[in-house]
Image 1 (cartoon, rainbow, N blue to C red):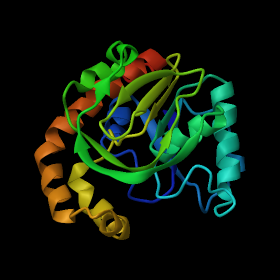
Image 2: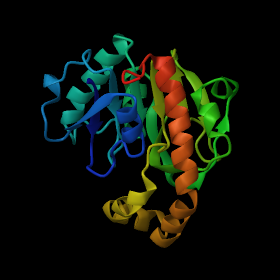
Image 3: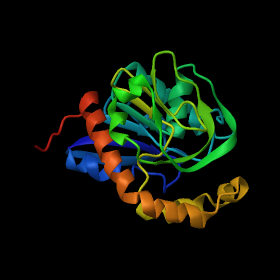
Image 4: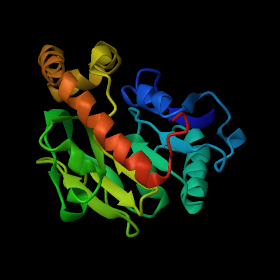
Length: 237
């Protein structure tokens, strides 16, 4: 089987509902835990898809978390090769930083569910499959759109929610992949952040229950379209 490598920063922020979709398309997923594994041993060219997942640190925190130096180099080499790359939340911020775009705190936290407003480019992209489905936002930093990229979406709080470089690289500030069946892991793992932001876990839990099916369906539609555009053919059909 061809491989997908997902760079993970905390164990519960994984590929979520996207992982079974990749399996259906014939791809085996391998997780690399960025903080404890040697990222210099990863061949940036070999995986059919390289994914950089979310996490509760900043894209410019390499002085505090030195592993980010090697991760940024992996992002750079992958993008230079123009091979299928997906960045989610922190992952998208790392992609933006590598391409010279500013990444900085918003001054507030965007945590919860809301719909996106698509740009003209977004309406012609895979994100058009989201429609009015509320997506999960969970971040305090934001990225500017790299010069090489097209801006795809905004929310009422954050103007830059997604970008696309040609068809091969997609950066998402929001969590399209979140498996809301497993939301309790997020509520426990990020309990301090929720408390500081004044977000009631009970409200987020209930909203997750209400949006679970809609978000999973939208995620599969979006990813199927983008994976096709990025060149990840269905190798089991």
